Length: 165
Image 1 (tube, helix red, strand yellow):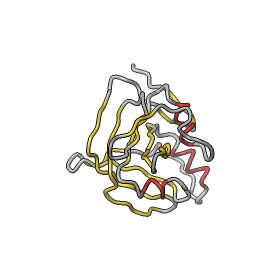
Image 2 (cartoon, one colour; image 1 turned 90 degrees about the vertical axis):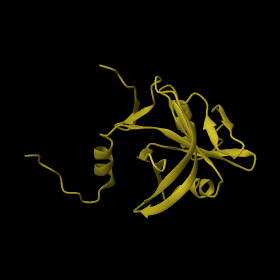
Image 3 (tube, rainbow, N blue to C red; image 1 turned 30 degrees about the horizontal axis):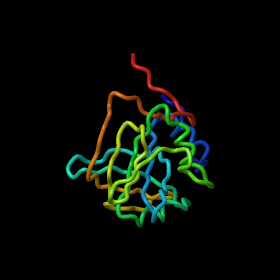
Image 4 (spheres, rainbow, N blue to C red; image 1 turned 90 degrees about the horizontal axis):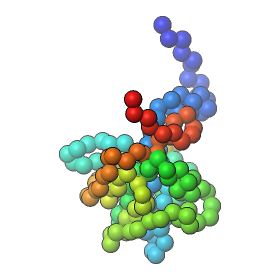
């Protein structure tokens, strides 16, 4: 039998448990006027093949998500294992998040981080409130993948590398 701790609502206990599950790291970005805006998110996951949907969870306290939400297109870049500095830049609270990040944008305003392992051109399909986060369903309109390259992995509150066995 597994001896479980009661869930008392302690966010640190939940973070520790959630951190046992490795996740990829994405950049969710778009053009606001002539400037790129974006966030880093480790909550991206596939949802449906038909229709083509993915999801991402965004904290309700994010000041960038309300700005991204209103954009015509969003670019999702699955970051590569050597892009932890780009991830840190996109996660910072102040300053120019794109100062040290190479990027380009589509004609529709989706922003893509260079060197990623996959890219998705998306629109918001639906959004749901879920506790202290919003669950955002993204409709995928175009994509590119380079599956032979290794992704950036977040596990146990730090970046890790995949190792083939």
